[in-house]
Length: 93
Image 1: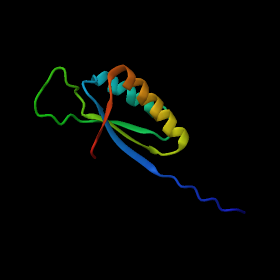
Image 2: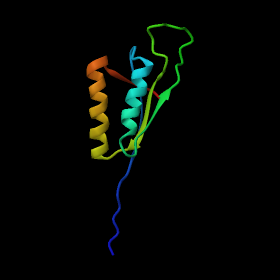
Image 3: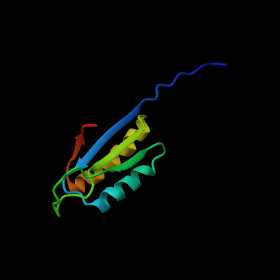
Image 4: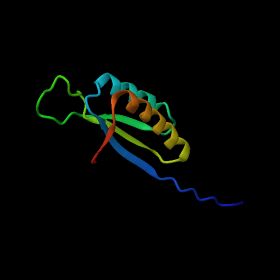
């Protein structure tokens, strides 16, 4: 019997997209959750001032096993929305 050691690292990242509506964050999180092993949650808004044009959510929190297949799928979904709504910015944890 052979022992196989696999290096499974977990990737955690928080992202935001300037002025992306709440409904779109929900849609993106839903799409990402369809990938096996991906956990996508919405971050709460931290701004103390209300801005109607500002999103009602603070960003998107992703956690997943960093495999080549998963990375490709996650990046594909994020790139699709980035092309429609603007660049993703990484938020410090």
